[in-house]
Image (cartoon, rainbow, N blue to C red; front, side):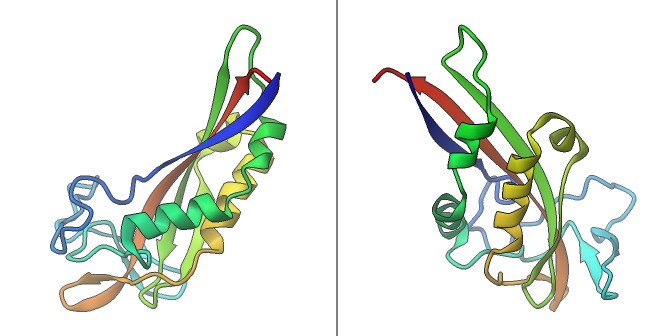
Length: 163
């Protein structure tokens, strides 16, 4: 049997009305009315809820295309084991990262569950692809560019196929 890889990219950053220019991201911390969640290492305020989200050049379609063209899918074939009796197996890496007020991506981290359950080479590949992404359009809050914390999940799926 020949194993092939299918990459599914789950975009968590842009849900429910991605192209709506005035969409507000609701903070999980209900105690902070302006969406402020902390300070970046460079001293910039970081927001989870903004007037304009940080956006990859080309929007969701451009982001998906970038991920599909640059992700090393062959790693999934090497590091995902398909259990006996199953036709496929999936490994998902959940990441969060910051987009600076200049649009640079930094502070890319995998969540602890991904680190504990997904092969380290797949986690490293998911982090690499986010870190190497081109400059984004920054988020805006109250008429000012601000740092923005984003989330992204990348799923590697390995399937058995008949020759």
